[in-house]
Every structure is written in C-alpha cells, then in structure tokens.
Length: 291
Length: 229
Image (tube, rainbow over all chains, first blue to last red):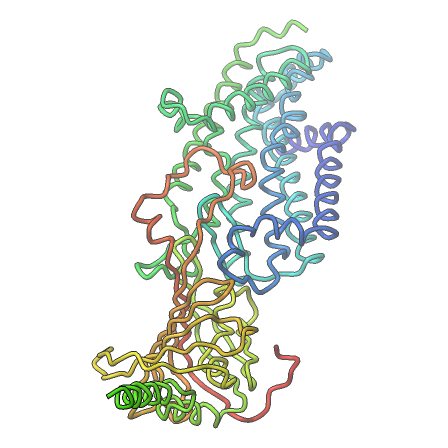
C-alpha cells in the first residue's frame, strides 16, 4: 500500500500545477504582511475606531498573532479552491489520460488504488496547510513579534494573553486540516464521477461556493439545512479564539467558549470525509473503465 | 436698619467666601498627606470589566511622579485603560492647588461618615471641569471622586485603603466610566451567519465599564525616571 501511495505522491509532485497553490499562498501572505508592515497602524486604527472612543489601548496590537489571524480569515476561505485543483484531478486525470485502466490491472485492488490516491491527496493538503502555517504564523511572529492577541469581533473584543495563544493556533490548524480534507474528499468524489480534469475541478469549486453562500445567508429556510452543510462548519476554527468569562466578566485563561461547537463540527466534517471517500470507492469499484 | 442689613449680608458673604476658599482645612490635610509622595512605582493586578471586552486579569505597574505624571503599564501585554481617566488622580487634582473647594454636605458611604466637597478649577487650561470628593475628615483620605472632564466624559473613582493609607495611597482603585457602542461590520471581521444579537439588557450594561487595580506593593520616593512615562 505504502509503495502505491509513494507513486501517487510522486505523480502529484511531478506536476507543475501542484506548486501553483504553494506559490499563490506564499505570494498572498507576503503581500499582506508587507502591506501591514508598511501601513498596518492605519489599518489597526481603523479597526479600533469604536474602542478608541472610550479606551486607550496600550501595547503592540499589530503583532504576529493578530497578523496570522487576519491571514487565516482571508486565506482559509480560498485555500479549498487550491486544494480542489489537485484533489479533483486524482482519478479523472488518470481516466482522461487512459492510465486508469492500466492501474486497475495491477495486483492492487481498486479500493487500494482509490485509498492510496486519497491518502496522497490528503498528504498534499496537509503539506499545503503546514506551508500556510509556517508562513502565516511563524513568519508573522518573526516579522511582527508576539504579544497578547487583541481580537476584534463584530460585537465584542477578546483579549487573549500571549502565553495562551499558541496552542489555540495548533488547535485551529488541526481543525482546518479537517475542513480541507473534507474539500479533498469532495474533490475526490467529483473526480470519480468524471473522465476529464476540468469538470470535477469546476464542480468542486462550484459546490464550495454554492454551499458557502447558503451557510452565510440568514434565511430561515436555509437555517434548517445549515447544520448539515460542511461549509457551515469549515470556519469554526475561529471558536478556538473565543474564551469563557466568569460572572464578573473576567476571562478564563486556557478556556474555549464553545468547545461543543468544535466537537460537533469535527464530527460533521469527519462524516462528510467518510461519506465522500466511501462513495468514491463504491463508484470506482463499479465503474466500467472505458477510457 | 439699612446698615444692619448690609452688615449681615456682608458677614454672610464673608462666611461663604471663607468656606469655599482653597485653604479648606479638610482638603488641605488630604493635600499635605498626598504631598508626602514625590513619586512611586506600584505593582498590582488589573481587571477590566467592560461588557464588550473579554479580558483576563493582568499584572500592572503604575508609575507616578509629581505633579501629575502617571502611567499604567501592563507587564508584557496589551492594556486597556479609560480614555483620559487614569491621568486624573487625587494627586493631579489636588497637587496643582488650582481649584476652589465648595463644601457640599455630609454622606454615609460604606459605613463611614464622609464630607463631600466640590472642586472647581480656577485654571481654564485644566482638563477637568468639576470634581466631587468624598473625604473622611478623621483619616484625611478620599474614598470616592466623581470628575467631569472637558473631552473624555465623566469618571467615578472609588478607593479602598490598606497598608499605604498613611501616604494617602489606595490598596484598591476602581475607575468607573461610560462606554460607547462597539460594533464592527461583518464585512470587516468576516464573521457571517450565526452571531446572536446583543440583548437589550446587555446593551444597557454596555454603557458602563470599570477598570479595577488592586495594588500589592508601592515603592515610594525612590525616584522614577521620566522615560517611564
């Protein structure tokens, strides 16, 4: 099994398209970091306009932790599109080239091949996330330094002490890996249904956009289906950055406001991954490979 | 008869003027007590209680130097302080001597019989407009102040005293202030969908905030460099 995973990884990393995602993420992060380094104070002043009416905020607000949060907010919405470029091509790309038939004549079963391809695509996804974490978190920490995380949400502000931040990022990245693996699995499912590369990629991206819009709209009709959509849960990595308070409005260090929400989201995302990959295996086992 | 009437009015005016003079003995005693302190560095724990802010307790250092330099610094972190409020302390109110003190009766506060004085600044350049002081005349300690400023609204400061009462320095100080609404558009915070609207009760509570500093240690008159401010 490991040998066919290695073969699949070799194929992924031999394609120039693989590096588009790494390059795009590096370029985006670098541009945002540069912009915030040069003109970040103006951006922070704009964000803190309401707070500055009442309070004086003293300290390094624009530090590596906040920059990473801003970057993740912007990028984790779009990284699924980059993941789809590879995942949605894993099976259909082979079908398009006519090599799928060749693969299925090897001593390895179809299930093994499908799972090996999914594991290889998942490794690519995780590496992309590690690349994102390295640039968004560690590079930002290096450039901007660290301090408390002063997080401005829509209705309130969360001030998390610097020593209480890093583990939250570890949690958020682990959570994000589940979100991106769901996209990988979806792309994989789309890929099992087609015999060309473009169709599944576009279909995966369209599905993400479509369900993301449904997840963000506050229409009662959609609220019924929202809890079952994977896109509703993908952004819940942010829950790691909200803390509980005591009756005296004193924040509890090391706490998470809604840990149940994180658990539920992880379960929903895991179920989606299993369903999508399972369906892919079933489809590929029954598929009459004609190309 | 006319002469008598004028004499009585004159006497009343004199009494009134004497009572509102800046050399009010109670205020003067407080001022003398505070004057013992040229500078201090205080260590303490700060608690921020503003309904739209979730913040944990933080260690702070407070630097003070005569006549009115004061700085609150959090020990390696971000601190939130009421705008303009911290700079208006007892020392900055009384050290300048640029005020008229008007006695405004007596009140029982926290089981103590306190005298109430209103301070009106005589210098137009001062930041504050009027300040009310609740003073214990026997201990010469100020337990509460309510100050209205020109630009930063009103502040209520309550104080508790402990080991450093001899210097007029509190062991606990609570700054109470009015807060304004806080709201950032979802388009900026990128938070869409499930955020619960703020209840009316919470919105009402939004208008009040407190910052509480409990001091554990003062280092008095050992010198504080201007770089600390």
